Image (tube, rainbow, N blue to C red; front, top):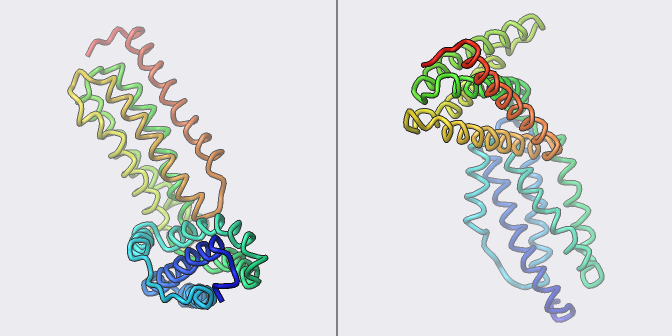
Length: 293
């Protein structure tokens, strides 16, 4: 069959054949540890569809291929660490580029149109399929993360100029951060309880853990730099804030199909803005109160 199509088309088909087989294996591996009967069934269905596409392309190439072990390992690890929802949707995003190749093949390979339609159905199936527990608590994680970024970043920035000593800033930030962690977690617990929810403890746990991790990451620069290097520590802390916001926003944008840029700039502007204002407050407080630490 390959004699009836161009070399360029055959090259595209080989690439797609390899990709379909690899993704089929990835779906099966993720299904093995994904929670929920419906999730497992849908993942297996997607794996079967990808394998069927592989067989169609094999009719053209006449080549038996093996899955890409590196790609299989990559997405399996991502699924275990960040959840199967994120891993599968991240992988499916790569199929957007393949749509153009399907269109280019339409004239020479009629089956490409059928496969294209099935690939488009995958996204809809995924949206209906994925019911991962951790995504139910994204709101709780956002609450803990955002509050820690805004409140602690502001406090650390204010302490930085007022105290001008990385050790004292770290100590003050740690006290504030730990206290605020318990405060936020308990508030989330009481809020969930008042709404009659049975998952109050889980909800407050996600909030508390997100807050505590953020506290540790923001205080870390003040523990690593020398006591007199409070400005470099502050700059490093601000960079960590941007990195945390970028990473978390990217995660939620992929897992929940939400826009990345607008949400990233919104959170970044709020957190950095509060830090700048608090830094100014620290300068004023030191001058007005005449305190010299």
